[in-house]
Image (cartoon, rainbow, N blue to C red; front, side, top):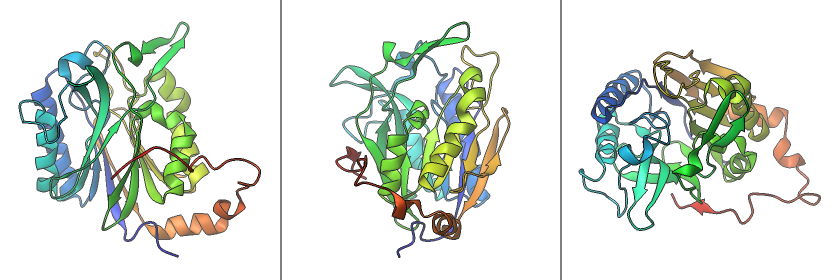
Length: 297
């Protein structure tokens, strides 16, 4: 049987503190990315909205044009910064997410860009499920007031290692996406996400471990650092979960980097011990991975 993860790899999740200055955010990201690279990370992840504050009032101001690709540096300074940083870090770089403005559709998106160590764009994921919630007395938030949803599941092939899946924040609440990725041979689900103090306490760890347990693959959840002076307060607690739903590493709410060494032996051990893939009853219920809408890698 072909290994899902061809060789061991160090993953780094950068829990970045962001500000209202895009240039400062890009500079801060560079410092942390290079720190992770020096520590041996070959897959490096930034948080959701790493180049801007998170909030509907900020999306239009910080939005960048990504199409047609590649954009000019004036159209998307974040695109070019990430591309150059992937080369400098000699790593695969999942650029959290940035607000995007599509000049053709005149719509805004919450978009993640993944770059190769050669600086080429490997994948673009537009957040599929928008964060529209209303918990009385605690939090009301409606991304759909500004953003539009993406329509593609994003799988990315990393030739030396295998396949990963990239989704954003609220996407994690929809297990179908993770199931489809896992059944298409992903060894790792990556979710840049800015859960808040209400939903983070309730469900951040639970969602990460559930997606790992259901699909017996690694899960990385990468949050911004918490800033209680900001309009939106991120939960933090970035973490990596193994295929047995055990937390390998996690941090608190402050700016930091979470590292984890991923290997195929752990994937194989978990799947042999509890052989879910051989026990599913697609004669009784449908396989959601069939006919799914996946973005080309």
